[in-house]
Image 1 (cartoon, rainbow, N blue to C red):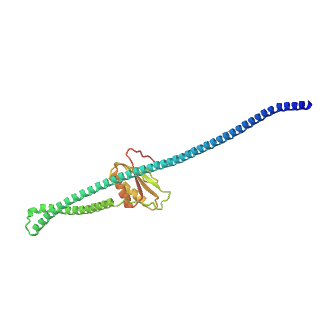
Image 2: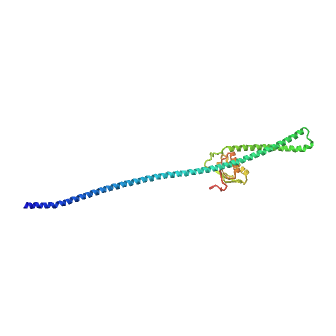
Image 3: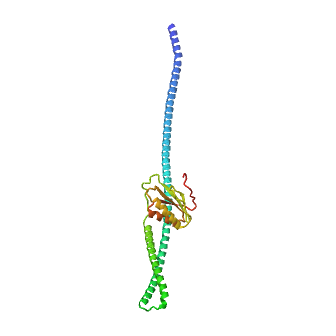
Length: 307
């Protein structure tokens, strides 16, 4: 009876423990499942975030490279624009210089053409006077032959004396005209040579940095000395080409000396072609150093600053 009671009691205790263990095991399994699931989710989330960060970094790096490439392209384009602007300015300066040189050359050609026309007119006048002189010589020779043959009557003596005096005057005039014709021919040939030859360029050898210009403003009716480092060079009286010729002959003769370290700077007004021709002829004759610049009529020229 006792054994059965004891056995009966053990079975009852075992029946009470096993349900608790089952519940405990299930709870532990569920908790392990939750932990494993959470760990896997966390691992997947960190991987996704890391991939997203890598993708974002790659995108930002790509944009940075694009911005850098754009900046390089813009710098290159800015450099090209600067070069184009510089070339444009240089081309404008060269075009302006070419126009000034063309205008100056045109003025010189017109001036020399006018001088050639004047020389041609003088030559034609000399030819007419020479033809008239030949006719008078023929008349004089005829009268002399008549006198030699005794055919000239005594009442023709006053006329003969008159004709003889005129003949002597004509001979002197003919000699003067021949000399003048020779001079004009030489000037005509010289002008033709100047039209075919380039402008003479003087080298200011031995003048150094101390050389300073005699600044002269040339108008159609006057010549103004704006600045002169050489003593005794002053503005001449107002006048035409004859006054300018005398002034520039004197100036060129003084600047042609080796002891003078100065040159003439000529400011040429548009209507002063004749005066400039006289100046240029004088400086070329004396081989004196000079430079010339076209100067518009509306520009105002005053004394050299600081002098």
